[in-house]
Amino acid sequence: MSETTQPFILFPFTDQHQLAAVGCYVETPCQTPNINTLAQEGIRFETAYRVYPVCSPARATIMTGLYPHTHGVCSNVRSLGSSVHELADRPELLSRRLEAAGYQCGYSGKSHLGTGSGVAFGGHNTPSLPRDVGFHGQNFSGHGGGGFGYPEYRAYLTEHGLEHTVPRVDDRPIPVTRYGALAGPVESTVPYLQADHTIRLIDGFAASGKPFFIWHNFWGPRGPYYSHKGVPRHVPGRRNTRVAQLSLPCSGDQRPSPGQDLSTGRTAHAERLGRGHPTLLGVHNVDRPTSRPHHGTPGCDRIVGQHGHHL
Image 1 (spheres, rainbow, N blue to C red):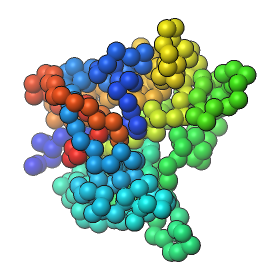
Image 2 (cartoon, helix red, strand yellow; image 1 turned 90 degrees about the vertical axis):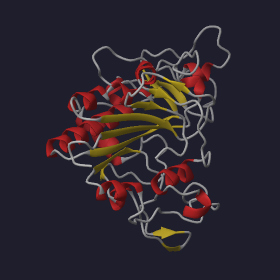
Image 3 (tube, rainbow, N blue to C red; image 1 turned 90 degrees about the horizontal axis):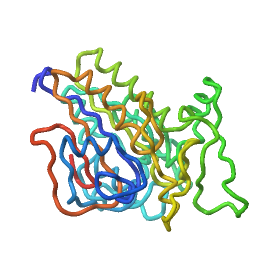
């Protein structure tokens, strides 16, 4: 295809995203209006098959098109069950195939396909992070635990006079799964930083006139479950209040809200750049398949689905 016909591709990717937290699939206290819009205007998949319900193997399959027993990432990197702890660069990777087709490849957020360390289990290790395999953008190593500890996030907070503080919810002992309401505004959240980074990638890539692929990776909605202040922590009558803690409001001024709905809410930015140009927007999940097919507007270029072999 020529550059004028190659679509812009923005690929938001959530982590451990259960159906109980997606409004376009079930009735839920979790507010996901932007994902719901993608499902309504595009195609919603209810039948998908994951190759492995664990983070690193699933992501490695997306990058290679291979089953875990073939690409070798059989468990999370740095876990004893995995044969490969860094996804080595090679022409067959998704990013390199897209690059060969004329695409610029951008990356935001969690990777979990490399550690960035030169040593693994006492032996030599060749680090492999997003920038090592053809991506531009963020280059986080390991799992990240929500992204709160990375220097880039801490520098962002300092630059904007913000802080990451989670007040105790009550007097009970701290739970194994961390949760709570952040003391700061939505601008203090990791997803907000990620959205701003992705928008900068979009603007930079679009200015070059070449097609782009941007993989926007959330750490959430898996724990820790942090919402910004003003989001309810409890829904009356709900037995499972932890689900309610994932409530994700969509602000009216198009500023991002925390959690998995954030990036989807700002894909309007990519759509504006793509007017008159094919633009593909997708939301996929690293876990939890569903059942039964459902179609929205025929021929639309929006996709919502649970994690499966999709590229």
